[in-house]
Image 1 (spheres, one colour):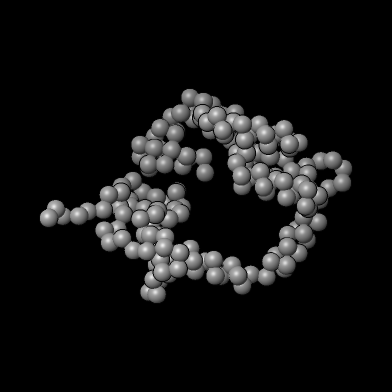
Image 2: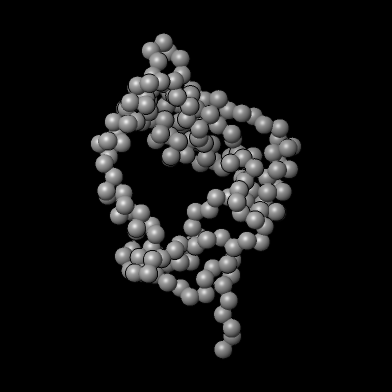
Length: 171
């Protein structure tokens, strides 16, 4: 029988979470600037009970007092909310679901006036550009930093070749 080996640094033994059936062949979140060339990425970890760290975190979230967290955010917004039409909060984003939701909630739930800040990709996908345009069409102001494209291409290429992560210079 051929010797088995793990490609891309994945564990040889496949394990499944006893709660959600997620397996350990899924890469875990990584702090990219700490990633070294040739270093293997972390995969989903499991406790001794066979439950994955994602399930453990989901359990921890159940104990968070969301009413208190809402009050803390409301107090923070109250400290910075302006009534003169000027921007009172910065929302970095691409127009993807996370930044759109953050901007929408801040504007309509917390009555903030966000300015959106975007470092655009070297090349938008069609859907990425449509999402970004829809974000602006929804009534949000955006400042887009248009970088030196030659330098952007150079950094993207070298980050990919050396780190395996093309966006590392822009995080």
